[in-house]
Image (tube, rainbow over all chains, first blue to last red):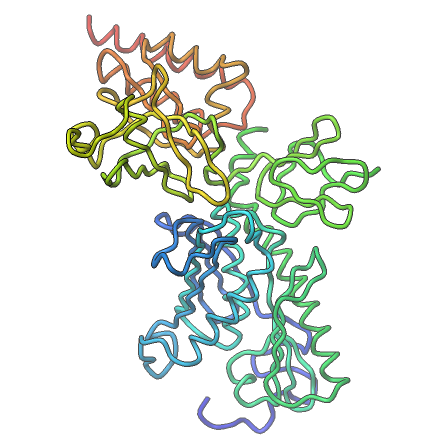
Length: 244
Length: 235
């Protein structure tokens, strides 16, 4: 993957990893994987492997960070040193600090912050293996972890990216497409409320392309949302089955 | 007016439950005339009120609730108590001593020390203040005997049963005293540890199978079987 391939998409419209333009990577979601966290989730999105854990609401420490009128959501996005080909320093990088903030802001609208003043909810996202689009996968997993911890939510938050590769707008970019492609548009949304909570763009797109990319990403979100709901229900299905 | 669920359906946060003349009950919220679920749980509709019985939740303090907590810290004029809620609770010295508290004569850690467990009632709680506890009623105060176990707070009503049928049955069969803290902490006090273990096993079973029907009968059976087994071992 060190040499740039001549074409990222071949004549038949097939991408480097064999997908079509509007095809997502295979997705696997699991809820309640960590017993020490109040809520947790694990996502495998293509080659991405990400763990998310949620704690709270609990008393804020340090105390001066508590807000008298609302709950505080804190997020930590962290990449394991072995998550990429070249060892990544375990110290938080500029990118990780930014992604932590972005993930926090995309999850906040889903919570009832005013319900439990002076408390805090902590979300930890640990990227075990990265292959492009980790922020989106991280948001999807973090939302599941919060729901699993029992914190009331307006809706689950789902994220999916779209972008431009070789003059074609495609959905769910993986590492090579992200690095060599022309643009990347990650979108997070709450599908049931029809609300977008995160919209970023990296690269250059024409207004038409941008609109197409956002629509494709939203389509992707809806597909992932169905799987997200399924994953959450699966953990509690056991309870249901005993009942019948 | 439409509803979008079947009774006892498993729902996730954000699922549309009802529209129109319905009322938003527990673990739901109302937005532009529509009722959505706010937690993972099972829906039920009671007299136009849509509720979600949460499968996963934490304890939210309410004045009047009986809770079981542990002392974390002995302070100047009271104790800080962990009640397994988003907030720590306060217990004032004057409330325990039943008279004005004088720092020069009273040694607070002689009354209650860090690590002690207490049964208490939530005297007051609102958004601006941490919950305040009281032990000024019969049955409340320091725990000296028995065993403690934790149950998911949402399942405490199931352990109590309809009009207390489940809990009084367990009490009767095992001869144990059981105090259910609404914060999910349960105190079981019996004549011996075997009785206590039996009562705790029954409560654990209720927690695991809380959404099944005919649970009371099965618990009765479990207790009877265990008792018979013990009789056999004796002989």
